[in-house]
Length: 354
Image (cartoon, rainbow, N blue to C red):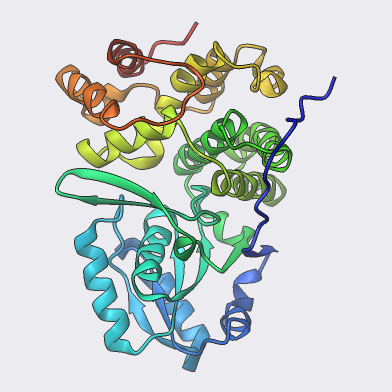
């Protein structure tokens, strides 16, 4: 019997996607396609040389580089970036990098109306979404708005070939979390569920091959394809407990984004699997036990498994559990503060979920 809902809304996919090998060469064409001619190239300090090379490639289409993007999109950094954007007379942004850089591009766009070309170099998966998470005064807040979503996303498999193996693993586990939560989202629809299911399959199949041979271009393409689908599913559904906890830990305690997602994933998805049948379609990919299977998958890949390794204390877990309940949000399984505290304790210790 079909599991298709009786009613659903599919909003469509407005972003233009360019996927392949060597697609970085097409950035100038994509800027012109948007009717723009003065791009500010964005990056983190770590990727400034790549951003400068791209700015040089763009020639007269570039007005310079802003290379101060930081994890969790601090508002103070965004304010400096907006000032630089206006001072340069820019009319669009080109964000080259992972979630930090793409988040900065979104923050500039929603404040200025700038068009965006996003060029992800990791598998983080925020590039297809209308979601922006920002930090200020030790708190991370998340909002959605059409002005946040990039107009164009360019995926170049070649840009991922040099991504270190450990970063590859945590980044892809970050991405796969989007697909898992999209499956049980309250606004899931048949298209988002198809994308999420194939995303999980692609990363499950491709990531071990990439870990074994980081230069395996076909495997890299498989994981990047999965990351695109994860991002698309995230962009059109509502996230639940997993993402809330990741944002609490990252925004309030400064934990690294991808590693936090990777560690929480088996615990949050395992917790919710007990209350929904929407994960049944992918459970077989992980031995029939989603929580334990994801933990085994992460462990085999050498992913981090303990929140304690990120510098969190047990007292931090008490505070995090309280923050996680401050605002209501949809989740397939009801919970109390003690449930969250127990989940965080298991993740802090690195225990395999039952």
